[in-house]
Every structure is written in structure tokens, then in C-alpha cells.
Image 1: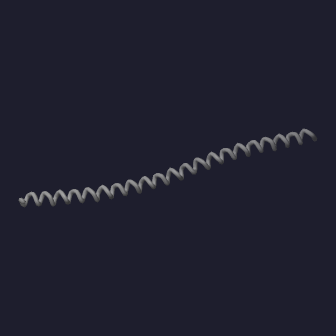
Image 2: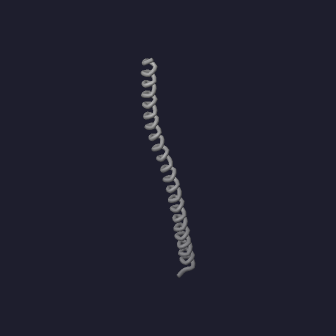
Image 3: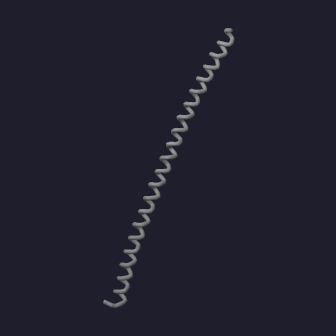
Length: 79
């Protein structure tokens, strides 16, 4: 074989190996970033669920206050 062909094959092999490892590194980084994003989304969804629960609790407390005020008004009118 010609010396030029051997050099070309070595360069080709080096390029393939370099591309392979670069792709693996990129894939690992994308997977890591995706996991971090999933964690952030889970935290956000947790906040939304807690906010919804608090809104329900506020409605219940408002209703209890209305009932208490109505009972106080009835007691004051009964005097």
C-alpha cells in the first residue's frame, strides 16, 4: 500500500474515534440537562398543587368567617 493511503486510513480512524467520543459526551450532557429540567418541573408542579390546596382552604375559611359573623349578628340582634 501507498504511504498516502496508510496516512489517510489513520486520519480516518482518528476522526471516527474523536467523533464517537464527542457524541458520547454530548449525549451524556443532554441527558444530565434533561434530568435537571425534569426536577425543576416536578418542583414547579408541587408548588402549583400546594397553591391550589391553599386556595381551597381559603374558601373554606372565608365561609366559616361568614357563618361566624352571621351568628354574631344574630346574637347581637337577640339582645
